[in-house]
Amino acid sequence: MKMVLVTGLMRSGTTLLQKLLAAQPEIAVYSQPLPLLFVETKARYLRSVGREAPEYPIADQFQGTYFSSSDFSSFLQAYHIDRNAFAAILDQQRTYSGQRTEPPYPLSEPHRTSLAGWLRRTLTQLAEPRPSARVAGAKEVCCEEFIPYLLGEGFHIVQIVRDPRDVLASSIAGSGSRDVGRPRPPLFLLRQWRKSVAYALEFEGHPRYCRCRFEDLVTAPESTLYQLESALGVQPPTSRDRSQPLDLDGRPWTSNSSYQPRRGLDRAAIGRYRQALDPEVTRWVESLVLPEMLCLGYEPTLSLDDAIRVLERKPEQAEVPVRRELSEYRWTDDRRTEELGRLRQLREGTFDEASFIYLRAFQRLRTAKPMSTP
Image 1 (spheres, rainbow, N blue to C red):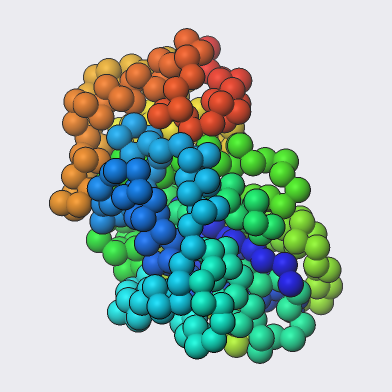
Image 2 (cartoon, rainbow, N blue to C red; image 1 turned 60 degrees about the vertical axis):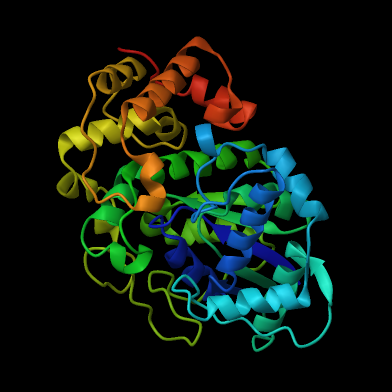
């Protein structure tokens, strides 16, 4: 049976994508069955290199939180988890709000295996009630740093991205906190979004990697799902209405929209940031993610020079309460200096892993247009 990880930033449409894929008889994708397996593994890695594991170990990968992707993959290849440790993670998940699917308890072999081994075993057991399934998968948010390792272990990856302005609006406006908890600092979300794009650009073209945009999934579900299902090697259904996502029990799924619950695909979710965000906040957002937006086909209102000018004048960011454990993402002079430095590196052609993660991603960002004042 093929294995797949569906991932992307929170509020990017990961749940919608999971529901649409799981409605395919040959695909059994489950929502967040092992979130703490990924969290605990990342924390173990950070401690192994002498760093303190923060409350949110799965964060971005820039500046102070930077780590080498190749080093992390090497750690994962050597890292094994015994049955008792895995069972302890499952026990901890029982009171964790991020678990959406309860996984089976490990009562039998293996006694000790890798992260990929536990994931494969769990997904295979979850999919047993669906004999038609040829693909088993998990949807877990913000797990892009696990992509290289899982590809090396034979997994497929499906990644979804969304306009970062709508991601931020969905996270801090309406009832977004209902699904993602207390609001996170905008800089935290936007750096996570950049991490997601860096991995998308690095692994584009890999035979077991594919991505889609939320906007394409909502406006053109048939063609978008056809491409994803074909990449997974399954036959797209010919008689199913793809505009109505279903739960695994076959009932219509009601979306977890931040604005109002909806059934079906909500095209009105595209561009809602125009009503939810102040125009100056929108310009600040674009200044932080401008080249990534251009690479993925999102239309900003700024050029690169404009973005530098926006940051130079100390713009205001979206006001949300900053969690103590994420205080390093406050919009301070130090953070502004880091972001200005990143844009100048891009303009000057100076590659820094702590700003861009991958050279290939950096080169793609440099060629994104427009990159200067018209």
